[in-house]
Image (cartoon, rainbow, N blue to C red; front, side, top):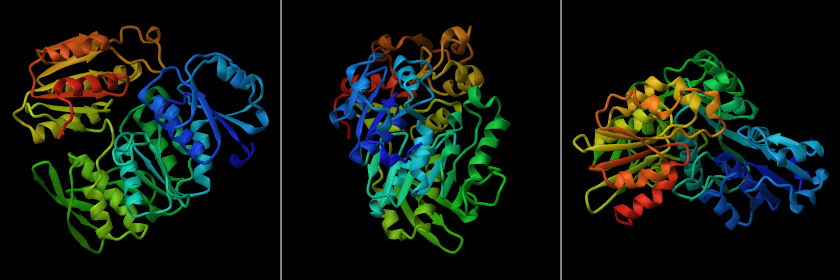
Length: 454
């Protein structure tokens, strides 16, 4: 394979994916010719086109594709794409075709890479690390799995000494990276369609941890066995680095941060949940170890606005609250609902959930049923199939899952009907949650509930 610098043209098959779009933005910012295909025109693909990236939405071999030369074109695809005429064309004509993870791995080889892995928490943590790098004006680029509310993108270029990457365990992608620093936030069972069982996914994380050259540059949440020496972090219990003395004042959370040698009091931010204080703790650890002073880190933590679809909260003059979140695993839903119940214990919660993947719904059905029973009312949307086909998962439907939910007030809805059903409900807090296309409800709900939030 040629060096990445030798390619002038980069074609992305599945360019609208959150990880793919970050890579596309990287090469576009580097002055390369970037184009691609995606099945669906979304807000993200529209933004990419507004930035000057050419995207098509039909699986057709057009003149722009046939004009590309294999000598100076790299084709990048996502493993979510199983069968496509465009991809077949590039393979048949002997173009260099690489998975997204491989290309990201090549980029990290030439930088001091900070890689954040975990079945939960990696998007928030990697975005927060990137935000702290930006506030400290470090020379870095970031490749994120979510849209930062601070810089309104999943990619930022501020130099190339460091790279901050969200290390995705799906398809064992993170084993392509070259991490100099790494975080492991969690190793809960997920992606069992790839790994088969919990022991195998834990082994995948051990293999990822083994890629980090220095023990002191591997940070693992306390309680996770990772098979090698490392530094631990935690909240409300002692570790190599930990936070405690959490206090809430209105919507602000205060906490104290401990290193092995000192205590820094009164960090403050507005991101709810103990799990998010964990994420903040390890982000502070990394930046402190890179030489950033605590005064800078305090200011940066205080002005962190979060990630789109990670507990995005709007409070309206009517008193109603709308929260939108990307959670798609029972552990994540429990964290979101737990935070809501902590902050607003007496308010009536309506949950609108879209399951993501038939396999995940099947593998964690009992966990989903338990977490979805913690609100007062549930609208359960049809399963978002992504890369899977219903015919391969006979009997795995939202109706099947709903039977396991113990709420009295529960019902099934298709996505097109969901907004009208929401408008008929009596609730104090509305939570829309899921990783599919449930985000299309976001704008209509915000407009209906009263326009701008405060």
